[in-house]
Length: 247
Image (cartoon, rainbow, N blue to C red; front, side, top):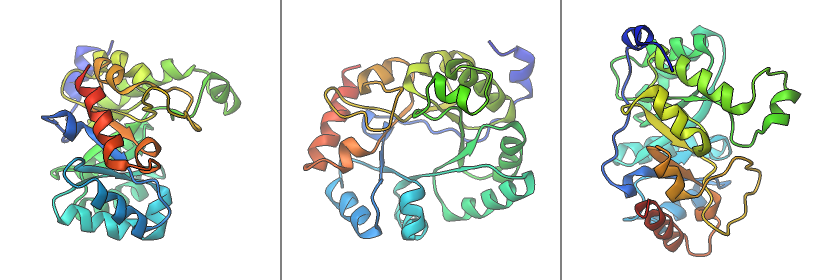
């Protein structure tokens, strides 16, 4: 558990307090074109109010689409996983603040997080620290040279994110309960790798069902393919929200 002295030093930038399960669902627009993303948003209108835009869509016009959604009052989670020298991260965050998006991911390296927090200070942007990708297991960690297993590294990076003043953590819902104990009740705990019962895990390895993720302390659930690849996206989203409410 992080020391109280570290908590006292933390100057936390905005987190996101969702009032309903519907607001806690973030749909990943993991589609190749803006036209397909626009169609998904139309189909989900009235059910979903928060969308994630990652690399696939970002590099196909998705950044302009993110601005468009944000300007219309829709919440946008820009999943860029920034990591570079401090100055470059800071300048990137300064421009992203101007886009009006709600959340932005930064790899949980202490210097990168510190630069991002300073650049976002005074804005409404919630910075999320990416701890360990949910597609990675212990063997993957060994292969890239980490001395920690995924669970240990997630907790270490959660402490560092809290100390840096980040708004939240991105982690597997399997680690959300332990992370919540470290970061307390106010920071966002955003969990990808959510798979409803019976769905294909795809390339995810550390997956959790929606209700269990909520019980574990997740503030927001990121769901992509189980919704956007569904023949009935609206129904798929409604079923996941119902699962979340059953927690």
